[in-house]
Image (cartoon, rainbow, N blue to C red; front, side, top):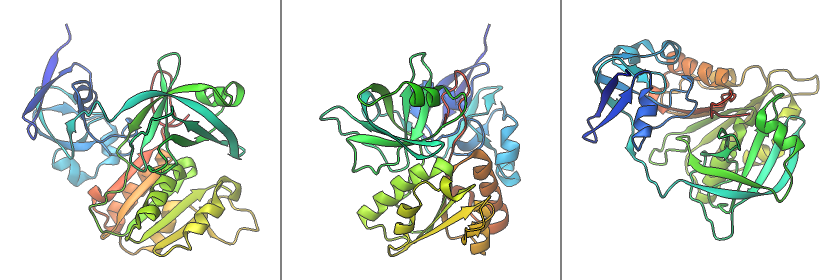
Length: 344
């Protein structure tokens, strides 16, 4: 017989059941509440919160993602931690699921083109009259026929809400990658669910912003920047975009154009440049470290490969004074069978 433990959420005065082996995040979401999360694999720390009473198995991922001080104060990753007794938790943010905010609709394929040899741009149009609300930086899920899903950040800003622009890294053997290149055509319908994600600019702060992207992690950054330009974003923003070669910076001219706007700066970084490249080289998060003696007064938004996100979070917090709660991220974890994670 499976054991059921209770999870008390003191801030809401609510208690939810958690079956044996179930993560805290899954149990809370199954009960109809939303907490911040992204990668669901212990990389990004978006789901970080405290266990204030009871015992849990925290999972090994937290040892690499959380600081020793955070762990000492009861912090766990809710996507990894599993209750061993009844517990009480203190999430950074939690609310009852808004059933009207998220919807599943059939989107029409309007355009498929290639921004780089291994990056496709998929433009979708929502049904006439469907104006979907989302925040810049959030993602949608493409629902697959076998019940799985694949999640992709929306590159278009929220005022362009009659459709979605997706930047998709094409992966060998990727289920959706193969469908995109071999089967999908203009006019086809794709069932999508949106919006999802906790990766969006915290507009209540006036802290200067460092945006950090690797590869197609540029997509939500594009949405954020274009939304900020439309709103007259007053905060200083420095955008770092890292890739292997110049061709992998697939919208380089667009990003360089942002750098001509007041308060915006753009820094491209290549890890494997050819002899003609005159710009910055190395790891993209190292460029941030080189440019900033301290990040104590900044907000950082990082999106892309898990190794980049994890390294940036660790180095920025441990060595450059970034407050742990000032690091916001989306880690593009490659999807595995039956696991709806970000990327392929």
